[in-house]
Image 1 (cartoon, rainbow over the protein chains, first blue to last red):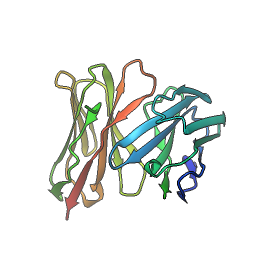
Image 2 (cartoon, chains in turn purple, orange; image 1 turned 45 degrees about the vertical axis):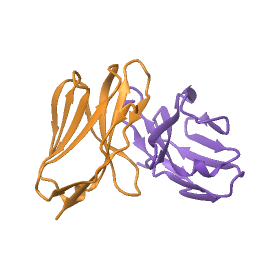
Image 3 (cartoon, rainbow over the protein chains, first blue to last red; image 1 turned 90 degrees about the vertical axis):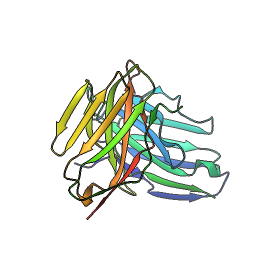
Length: 114
Length: 112
């Protein structure tokens, strides 16, 4: 089985540019999570979806960040405009119905904003 | 104060020794606790979960939970160089859907 798929794996952009990160959860998983990991702040939950509906977006740092899940097999995290402090590794994770405690992480997208 | 605190390490142990990783949490409402392993440059993977006070064993791993002290630990017996990684402790609040709070992780080095 394919795991969680994220793209791109690496992204380098300039301050002010729009960045879109993509995630395909494991088939059959109905919960999807976006995390950000930095040395300073560790792993932080940004937002999570259940059955394509955003349940908790309290971790989204500011209005420059937005996330969508138009269907069960695809989600995006967008940053517009990007800033150097957004540089981090962004992980997407998914979990099965009734097994939300077991989250499977994707390989991550390493974002560098110059 | 962070929800979940861990010593960043690095913790160095010789091969074959017991590695002891510790974690404290601040919210007494937390009911579920998890240990994730993260190799350098890779994504976290779940290795243990614990929900009740006491010990839970799985192979070379033992998770320990003490809710009165708000303390979680992970013991790795017969440590191997392949166990060298960063170990993340996570807590989940009761009635807070699926929101996990992660510690910053403890880096473990197992020396051959």
